[in-house]
Every structure is written in C-alpha cells, then in structure tokens.
Length: 468
Image (cartoon, rainbow, N blue to C red; front, side, top):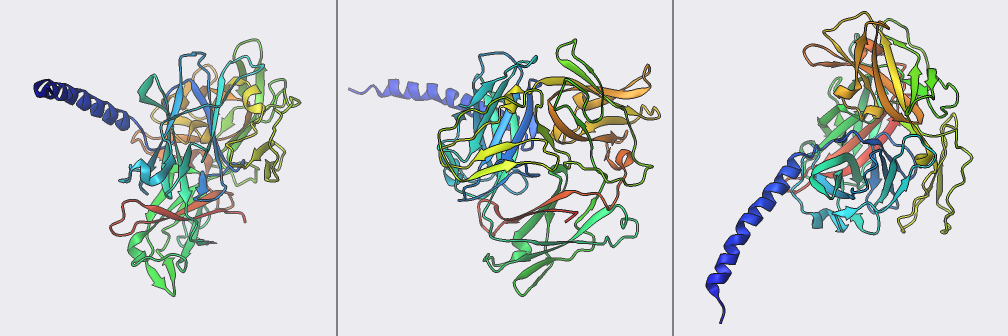
C-alpha cells in the first residue's frame, strides 16, 4: 500500500530545497554583468577572433561557416579549477531575453572548457584556455546579442569572465557615408555619418517603429550610440536623417608600445629589468596630446596582439586534417601570423606564441601638472575598455609623474589615457585631443524588434574605417 503521508512529507521537504536552488540561481544571475568584464585578477589576455582575424566587434553569421575563437590565460597555479561556459541570449539593450535555451541553442549549454595548454619557457607560469563557437556541442539557432559566461564549476555562483558577441542573419547591408559635420565646432574634431537601410530583403510592417541601430567606435561599448531610429521611409529605404545624430569625437591615434621581445627594447620602451620575476618593463613617459597638432601614426584602433619574437622559431603543432580554407592574419608591419582552420570538427590550429609568450610588469607614466582632483587611467582593449581602480595612475612625487604598473603578456599594445573629473565624468579629449583626420573603425548593428516578438533579431552589420 502506498504511504501517502510519507509522500506528502517528502514533497514538503523538496520545497525548501527548490526555493534554495532558485535563490542561488537568481543570485548567480544578478552577479553577471552583461558586458565585457573580467571578475578575478588572475585571468588575463581575454581575446576573440572571427575566422582567425581580429574584429572590432565579434560577430558571426547565422548558419554560415564563421567561427569565433575565444581565449584567455589563468596565471593562478591552482589545479582545483574546472572552467565551464554558459551562453545567454540578450535583447538589443543587453538584457536577458525572454526566450529559452531551446529557442536559441542546438546542443548543450553548461559545458566544460576542454582545450588548454600550459605555458612553456615563461618566468610567469599560466594556463592558456581556448574554445571555438559554434562547435559540435553548441550551435546557434537565433540571431541577436549573446553573452558568453566563463565560471569555475567549484564556484558556480561567481562568474570569471563575461564576453559580448553577436550572431547576425545578414539580411540588410546598411549604406553608410562619412559627411562633414554640420556644427562648425565639430567640423575639425568629429566624425559624422549619413545612414540608410535598403529594406527589400526584410519584411516588416513598420520599419520606423521596429528598426534600431547601434553605432560603436573601435569596439568600445562605453561610448557607443544606442537605439538610433529611422525617420523617413521612401521606396523601400529607411533613412536616418537626424542632423548630427550619428556623431563621434574622432579623438587621436592611439599611443602604442612593443614588448614582442623582452631581450631588447622595442617601440616606446625605455628600460627592461630581467633581474626580477616578472620581468619589469618601463615605458618612455607620455605627455598630453591636447595642445599638439594631428600627427599620422600607425595604430590598431585600441587593440592589442599577442606575439613573441624571442621564441619565434618554435615549431607549430602537427595538424592531421587537410583543408583549403586557411586564413592568415598579417598586419602591415608583420606583427603576427595566426593560421585558422575553418572546419566542422572544432579544430583550431593554436599559435604556439599564445602559450610561449611571457608576462611582464609594464610601467606607464604620464607627465602632467599635478591636479589631484582628477583621476587618470590607462584605457583601451588592454583594460577591456573599462575604467577600473587597478588601471588608475597615481602621482609619484619623486618622479613628478603619474604612474601605474600593469601585468601584460608579450605583444604589441595600443592604449590611451582617460581623465575622470570630480563629477565622475569620463573625458578622453583632454589628454588626447580630437582631429577629423584620425582613423577609426566603426561598427553599425541593425536590430529588428517586431511587435509581439519575444526577442530582438540582428539583421544587418556594417564595419568600415574612417580612412577608406
């Protein structure tokens, strides 16, 4: 005979466990920042590539052979960690969307990171992790915004990394043109755009209501322009004609330095101390660019590249598969070479320089008239475009300069200096200056939010340079 009293008691015991589980899940979700963020100090060099190439914003095409490669380093020597990943679908405003995992993924979501390499020949030991998307376990069904979450299985409630990326349906090709800024004040220091969307390949009842556009400069989401709206719809073309609506400070070319070798001084390096671990690199001190005229300098629009000339002759790992789809990244100065194999077997030919490059303690210094009311930060992709306490320069009365030291992997780095006033307002213009001649990368993302739909579709992407 069934003991219904015992079953009822068992059910009541399950209720508190279920409540605790839901509370734990809610707390874990609340700690996740839906932006590019590194939550722990021991994780470094978080990078993404699309089909083996660096892109300002990581975007792959739905249903195509595109592959996003994601990698990072862990400089903590603990062997108790088991990193896993989760993928969260978001709406156009980077809030968790209403659809379930079954609606946007094929395969599994909560999966371990199975690919890693221990560092070789480095003074600072680390573990290099990497993974490709989509892979045999995880494929995408829906377009839109996504957050990749990396966490430790032993501390599931604490995220390690969050990284934004996008999946596009590639149905629209925006027409973007640079135009002279309308404002006389902005004419010499800003980049302004005209923007049109041919709508022939997309069926929507009310494009002026349902279409939204984000504009991002150099992959920096903090100064992006969100939710731009079209105003005129004529002959299947949606026109964005607001005067000066898509308008960015052009700023200046990025400063840069070269630590591809730690045996001799590279670009903008003043001194290298190999007698300590980690190796110390002191950069030539910087000054404000505000009062200077524009000077053409080659840069990578805020990005950085991992490379190691000290171990450049190391052999590549043998790769069994053969394919004609081989892409190579070579920048104009031959800074690095990164082969990419685009197959359906989750295979990526990892560059040995990713796990043979060492870490160095890099000293930045900025010469300014002391003004202790303002704060100054190193800024760029090397800081995930974030303004963080560990990137703040502090005034050193002995050297009479503002200084900060960051642990960075060997490579070629772009950077700027950010000033934050007493009111908390961030200001790049004061230390960099702004000139219309500056070359920047711009990414335009077009979203479709139809009435009654449960998620925002990404239907078009356009990337262009202000110089071409």
